[in-house]
Image (cartoon, rainbow, N blue to C red; front, side, top):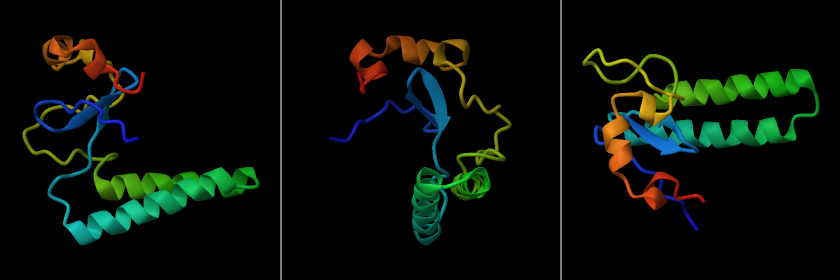
Length: 111
C-alpha cells in the first residue's frame, strides 16, 4: 500500500509526520531524476548494510549527494526568493491555513 502524503498548494513540499519535506525539482529531466533515484536507493541500502562507522559515514554522504541532485537538499529549486521551510511544522509556516483546512485523515495518512 502506497501512502499519499499531502502536497502544499505550490508543490514545493509534502507533509509527513507533521513536518514539511521538500519535493524533488519538477524541472529535473527524467533521465537525471531516474539516475538520482537509483543512486539514492543504493545509498540507502549502503547505510542499512554498513558494517562500521566509516562505511556508514560514506553511505550517508552518498544519500546527501543523491538528495542534492534531486533538489531535495541544498539550494532551493524555485526562483522567487521564498525561504526553505523544510522540517518545519506546517502550523509555523505560511502553509498554516492550508494545512488546518485539511481533513485530519489527510494531514496524517500514515496513521
